[in-house]
Image 1 (cartoon, rainbow, N blue to C red):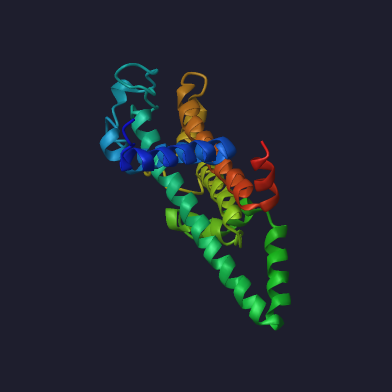
Image 2 (image 1 turned 90 degrees about the vertical axis):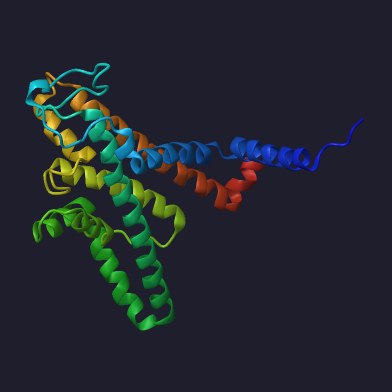
Length: 251
């Protein structure tokens, strides 16, 4: 029999290793797969979207989904599919930025408190005060002191969460995406001229009886992103926790 080529001998273990990892940690694979698709949509939205998300065409207002407009049009005749794709850019940018920033701040505060025991008690009392206030209320209070912008939304969501762990950062990312959507839905988040899933649903709630697609499609994309981030967080917890990792090997 002919000997296997070096390429075949190296590719087989790699494929087998990925299949074994996917069987042991399916939530990580599922979460990463959905997130990669959403990140690709966000990055290539200007080229994927068939129309300008801000283009107004009153003659095509509140048209149902069709071959010309896959997700229909809104009350101003704007293409909902194009606006939904561009909305991914805002939600993912806010979620990832808040998760990264809050993680770095949390690690810095933890290191300083660990080395300087005198300020540890002060830091803990500040953290207790922040945890006693719901994050959404604190974010609304901060945004009310300044004008609405994506930068203000990121700062307002970052301050209540300073997680010290990588796994917690994934949950903060999902929470930040939801809070951004809530703030935009309430009119206190992303400016109306920037398409985001929150303000799309806020605009669509008035026309829900005649335009169900205005709420369904942005809400579906928002749910998929939050689900993917939570699946990734659960998978990382299973992967990094020795007890859960041993139980996964026994399956």
